[in-house]
Length: 377
Image 1 (cartoon, rainbow, N blue to C red):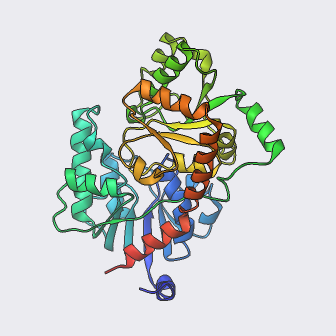
Image 2: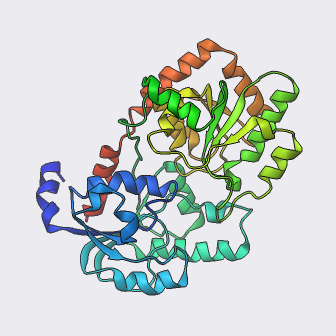
Image 3: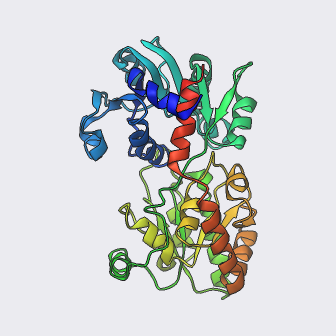
């Protein structure tokens, strides 16, 4: 369907989106970037907390249906279906779809990954409930969308998809935000506000087990023990508070004598994160399971060379713009970090490749792809 034809239909098509996860990591980033663009393509209505959504200026003239029920809850399943008004399309950005009938003509779901099924560390009860929701998401939705070839293969591996086509969209980078920072005043302010060390490597994410921070901490210990590097580790994210956080991580850091070598920044303002990427000597992403993995691309766009785990979707997304390691092997993580940090020519090459690769990922293209899939009959 031609783009002009799609635009001419926009005012005739209503799209309702469950936006309750707009402040979550991962999916929240998607919603914050995609919804303002979808607003120009559909008659858009959001479901969520009005007080939270009011923080985003582009929501001021949108219809908002109040729903504060937490995801994965019984209340969610009871109320969500009833809250969805008559509309052409209803979009679930996560697999917690309503299992009861709705008044939407077509239902669309985005399944980022099936980590809940692939993981061996989650409690059986969580896995069973996730399996119920994920299978319902596939069975009840008219369109199933994912974000990488890896996730498409995982969905087919763990769920009954029959002859249903699994669509794929790419994600994007906000290139107005993620770029090499040259604002000296802002750089000094960010370094001071977060007490950033002079030389540091960076991780951005949470402490869920599959993010594999334990092995990154062990790699840092190896480098320190061998007196190979004097770099600190800065972790952008909270120490605790995640549903499935790694509760033993802080104990490990303490037992290895790394308390003074690792800094948790806590909450970081959106306009400060690109600066932190730019200041880092190296971005390290040891995750063992990702449906896409935006942080390496954010680092690349900000001019930070990256080393990443050769796992899941990460090689598919990062291509040849990173150096890879075995995320299950702390010695390999340490060796790869050392290789890049001690080779200026390699770091410069990775920086240039990363900036070039990141340019290929933008939210406008992602929104166009999503619109086309939603409207496809």
